[in-house]
Image 1 (cartoon, rainbow over the protein chains, first blue to last red):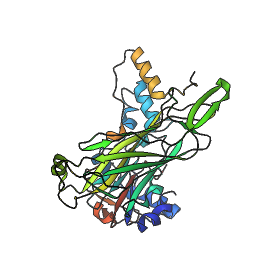
Image 2: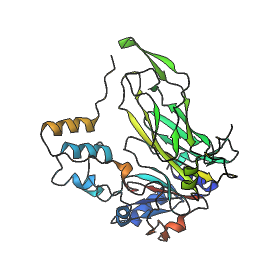
Image 3: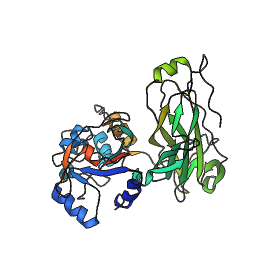
Length: 298
Length: 75
């Protein structure tokens, strides 16, 4: 049972683990006994907590309602229930997903994707040493085409700093994604959600490989081997930014990793993986000159 | 020439619904549902597999909590 295998890793990092589902306590107890589950599995029969979280899967109700034949509803059944169809006993389930919470219960990251994205977010919490010597937390998401592990370069930043978001990407077996130059395809890119005082610089790409698709005699730039993208971010250091961010303890950045993957037979639909990063916001050590401090040197 | 795409099911469904003149239902975007990054999640008191009552705070580790909603432990 995948979550059980990760309990010790999470405990070592001081992170608790719990699941919630609409099952009865009896059903959960049977499952937990069978798989030797040591973390809390919480029962929410009647889905009252699931509803209060706003993540009740409404598609399971629509599939039996007056617009059940609406192709848009049927498409969402395939996307959010299962490809083989829906049963009435599924009514009350939550959309599956994970919230990473701080000790105040605030969301620091969340993973709620369509069914075709595997949620191996438990395997995902990892620590690296950032460039400022402190340990940073990264997250890892697996899709059916690739695995991406992403982390900020620094655990904490101050206004005026430049830092990076790093994406270590490993295409799955037989898969490749498109690199700059492959203009007929969705080139792999990171999209950062705009927010005040934050500037995302152009993404930095490594050298790509040429892929020869023999049936069409097509040569195109791809990444097949593991590769790393670096997204540099600049936090404005001007007086307005200093005033606006004073007292704020953390900075959360959200965005997506967008790509298109193909294997040697077919191309898959473009995918957009939602991601987020949280860094500490540190006060600047001393008052800066008018116009703010220069970016920290590397 | 670009290789054949696996036509996405939602796209096919949308095209079909437009051609039938059906009233367009908004597609669901799970990323917009539930507490967003930076928001506090609702408190709760739920029973675990051993019959113990657990609150959100009681599940917290010193560095936080990973709270996972699963479809079912039963199927």
